[in-house]
Amino acid sequence: MVDKKLSGAGLRGQSAGETALSTVGKSGSGLTYRGYDLKDLADNVSFEEVAYLILKGELPNQAQLDEYIAKIKANRGLPQALKEVLERIPASAHPMDVMRTGCSMLGNLEMENSFDEQGDVADRLLAAFPSIICYWYRYSHDGVRIETETDDEHIGAHFLHLLHGKKPSELHAKVMDSSLILYAEHEFNASTFTARVCASTLSDMHSCITGAIGSLRGPLHGGANEAAMELIEDMKDEQHARDTLMGMLERKEKIMGFGHAIYRESDPRNAIIKGWSAKLADDFGDDRLYKVSVECESVMWEQKKLFCNADFFHASAYHYMGIPTKLFTPIFVCSRLTGWAAHVMEQRSNNRIIRPSADYVGEEPRAVKPIAER
Ligand SMILES: CC(=O)SCCNC(=O)CCNC(=O)[C@H](O)C(C)(C)COP(=O)(O)OP(=O)(O)OC[C@H]1O[C@@H](n2cnc3c(N)ncnc32)[C@H](O)[C@@H]1OP(=O)(O)O
Ligand SMILES: O=C([O-])CC(=O)C(=O)O
Image 1 (cartoon, rainbow, N blue to C red):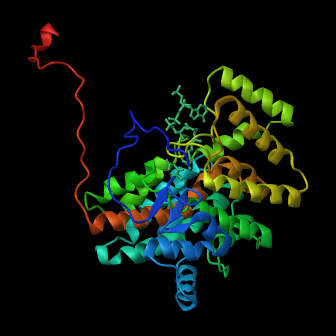
Image 2 (image 1 turned 180 degrees about the vertical axis):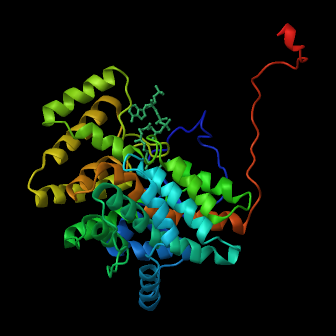
Image 3 (image 1 turned 135 degrees about the horizontal axis):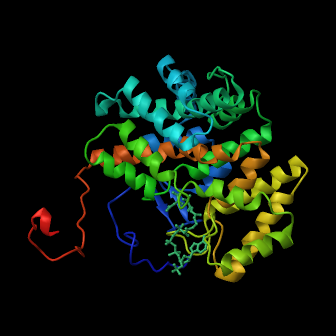
């Protein structure tokens, strides 16, 4: 793997602390969670095993996994006061704002009273996030008050079940599980760093996660999967895709779902979600979105040596599973909660308040003039 020249603005290339949670762009396929290669995990374990690994340090054995899944299943219900808040949020709201409010409200109702409770709070959020977004979505869009507790073993299948009101196909359940694994953890990205900065003040878990959701919302970060969908949805065929992108590049527009702050040649998550998108296209019986996405990938590499990041093929994959575009980034939240919470715990375990310095570029020292003279 070629090292990217990392310098300049955005703290790029500067180490901002230590982590034992993941490496990005360093070894294996380029992404490891607690020493395990992403591909190895995606090929062999479920998202719940990955969540356990990230949050608790090791992969679970069968008894530990059974207990963990049972715990998550038992924590899917929402308090009435939270349901009432969700019912007050209009259908026109941004679903990431719903996630932010849902997490924050849960913090009011189920406060983290001591750091001893941090593991339970993280597990509760992991179980409750799909319920929060689907409860709001189905109430505001379909006028239905859904039951948020299902008997689905896996969080990905549970999410699709709540959203569509029926159990997903085996393929869709598998793809969602894999997608949640891909998004789970990514070192000191912007939203995780937000969570760590908040944790460094010894704040509570809900505040750290609420702040992280706000950072993930932007199109330069998690919001790129939605922006990618908006880009490809109207592309009629490969030629149209090529012409659209060439025009955008000429106008120096940013193409969402491409490029990365750390990876230089490829994002290891892309090959996996691209593979699933191809299978979903086949299953769906219409491969237009997959084909235009592949064409976009070629154009961007030919023209700019830019590659698809984790978000680009998630757009077509999620679309093929009938997921509304505006719910794409909230799914990222349901997964990344694991990484965020683990980073909060790691920060707390060896904390010093994060407080960098700034290079001052403002006015020289000067005296205040009386108001009549300004
Ligand atoms: C899960 C995730 O959060 S993955 C990231 C999701 N975000 C996106 O997909 C948004 C689109 N991509 C981008 O905006 C950027 O690539 C980022 C934010 C991901 C990384 O930003 P940086 O680290 O500043 O990118 P980098 O240093 O590689 O940029 C190099 C050049 O390529 C350009 N570039 C980078 N990405 C893109 C893009 N997607 N489209 C067009 N040009 C791009 C930059 O403008 C820059 O050119 P400049 O030096 O003339 O300004
Ligand atoms: O690492 C980053 O900067 C962004 C990213 O890919 C992620 O958070 O998954």
